[in-house]
Amino acid sequence: MTATTAPALIADLPQIRAHTPRRIAEALAARAPGRMPSPGEQLMIIAADHPARGSLGAGPDAMAMADRTDLLGRIMEALSRPGVHGFLGTADLIEDLALLGALEGKLVFGSMNRGGLPGAVFEADDRFTGYDARGIADAGLNGGKMLLRVAPDEPGTAATLTACADAVNDLADRELVSMVEPFWSHTENGRLRNDLSPDAVIRSIAVASGLGRTSAHTWLKLPSVAEPERVMAATTMPSLILGGEVPENPDVAMAGWQATLACPNVLGLVIGRTLLYPPSGDVAAAVDAAVGLL
Image 1 (cartoon, helix red, strand yellow):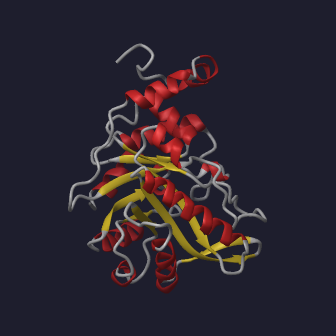
Image 2 (spheres, rainbow, N blue to C red):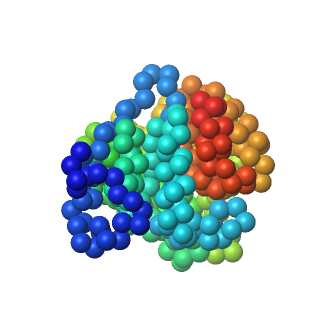
C-alpha cells in the first residue's frame, strides 16, 4: 500500500478532499474487493444511505445521524465485526470509508435515488440524485440500490418507475446487481406512508420484479412483515431483509428477521439504524446478535 492509499483518519478527511481529492479514486481502486455469496450463504450488509434524503432520525432522536464523525465511527465499528460482509450507502459515505480503509474485503452497493425527500411535494417522483450505473462501475462497486415506492395516488410514481427500470437496464448491461427496495405506498397528511401488510408487500414485489428488459441481476430489499413464507413465495428473486425504523423492542425485530431468513430465497440482512443506533447504545453487540441469526 502506498502513502497515498494508506488509511486516513476521520480528522484528515476535509483536508484530503480539499487538497488531494484524487486519493478518493486511488483508495477505491486499491481496496480489496468483497466476495459475492456462495450458494446457501447469507449476507450481513450495513446500510447508511438515510442522510442523503434528509432522514437523520433514529429512534427518539430526530438528529441522531447528523454528526458525521459519530456516524462514521459507528459504521466502522459495525463493519469491523465478524460476519459483516458489506456496506450500502451514498458516494459521500462510501468515499469517506474507502479513505479510512473500512471497506477492505467488503461488498459495496451504491445508493442511487435519494431525491424523494420526506414531506416534499415531489416525494413520489423519487429522482436519481446519487450514483448512476457508470459511477458504480467506475468506483468498483458491486451494484446499485434504488428505492421504489409505488403510490397509486401520486402521479410522480410513473417517473420513478421509469427511472428504476432504466437503472435496472444500465446496471444489467454492466453485469452489476440492481437492489430494488419496493413499497406499496399512499399519501397521508402530505407524507408517503408504506403499507406493510402482506398483500401490499406482495404487490410491490410483483411490480419490482418486472422492471427492465432483464431481471438476471435483480435482487430485492424487502421489509420483514407478517406471513413471511407467503410474502417470499411471491418472487424467485434473491432477497435481502431490511431493518426499518429503530424498534422499541429489538427482540421482536430479531424474531421477525429470523422467521424471514428461513425462507429459501432470502440471502440475508441489510440493516442500518437498528444496528447503528440500538437502544442499548452498544453497536458491536447489536451487530453480533444480528449476525448470529445467519
